Image (cartoon, rainbow, N blue to C red; front, side):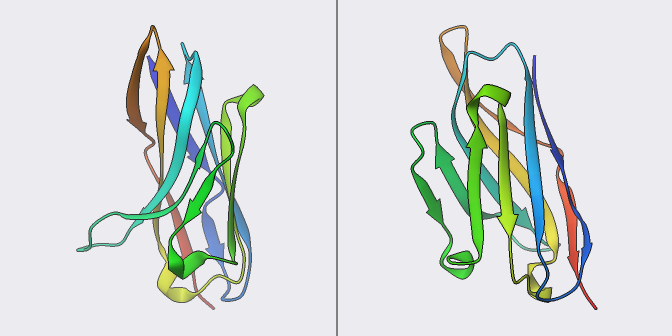
Length: 119
């Protein structure tokens, strides 16, 4: 079994910063890629940022220059540093990872963490 657990969400003022974490646990050989998505009610889940095991990153245009995705392969943990947050970025943030175990790569999701950007 593999679990992804997000943490670090909460309430932050506009212009503020927050760091989300995503810890993977279980029988993991390696994490091939980790992504962060966000979703607000009534809207589809949106890809925010992603990072591969080789360190390649990609970002949604709306967050470029403000968000930084990273990973600590030794700890099987990924991070999303978010700066200069905007109220419209209030959403549930989900961690998603492609994990290799027992010679099979499968996709896993965390349960989500709420971020509220408000004064």
